Image 1 (cartoon, rainbow, N blue to C red):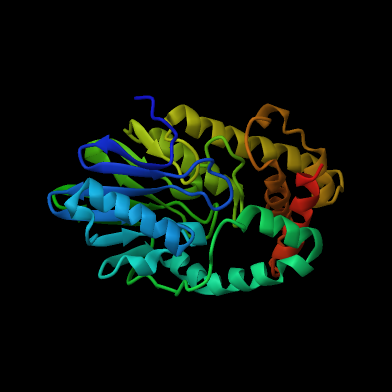
Image 2 (tube, rainbow, N blue to C red):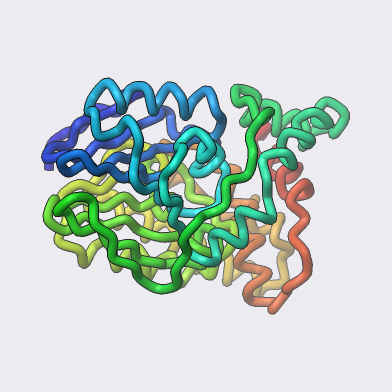
Length: 315
C-alpha cells in the first residue's frame, strides 16, 4: 500500500475516497472519512466537538463540491468523538447500528460537559479527565439521533458506489460497525482499530473484537482507515488482534490466580507495546474481561476506572 503521511487534515485516497486524520490519535483525537461519487457523498463519523467538526467539514467542502451537503452520515459507534458533531450535518440521513443508537442516547455530551465542570474537585480522576479531554469543548452539543438503524448488515449506495455497513459489535462499544467500499478496496473501521495506541474495551467480549479483526483481514482491501491513528494495512490489523489476544490470555491467568482486576492490570507487562500511547487503558480492558468471566452485569463504575487509569498514567 502507499505510505500515507500521518498529518492533521484531509487526505485524498483516490477515486472519491477521503480520510480525515487527527494526530496523535489519543483520547478524543479520532479519524473520519468521506465517500464521494458524482454529486453524492457520505460522511463517515463526525468529531468530538462542534469546532473540530466544522473545521473538518470546511476542509471537505474545499476539496469537493459534493461535500457541501452530505446525503448520508454514518456513525461507526456511539462514542462522542465519532458522533458529537452530528448536528452540523444538516439534512443528511444519519445511519448507525440499532445498538449504537441506543447507546448514544445513554451518554449525551451534556453528561461529559458536567463532569468536566466538576473535574477540579474530583481528585486524581478529575485531573486525568482534564488532561485527556481539556482541549475539547462539550458545550452546545445537542443530541442527533440516527434516523435509520439496522442490525447485522446494510448495503447503501453513494452514486454508483456500493457501501457495506457491517456490524461487528459488541466489541469496543455495543454496536461497532465497519464501513466497506468494495470497489475502492477501502474500509473505515471506527474504533475496531487503534493504530499505535492501546485499544480500550468498553463493551467486549474481546473474542468479538478479535473476530472483527479477522473479518477485516479477510477483506479484499488495500487501505484501512482506523478510528484512531495513521492509515494502515492488514499488518496493523494483525497487531491489534495480537494485543487483544495477549491481554486476554494474561488477564485470564491472573483471574484464575485470584488477583483483582487492578492487580492484574499492574502485573501485565506491556513492554511489547511500549511505543503505543495510553497504556493505562489496560485498566479498562482487564476490568471488562473480569466482568465477562464473572458474569457481572452490575453498572460500570466509570469514574472509578478513570481514577485507576490516572494512577497507572502517573507511574
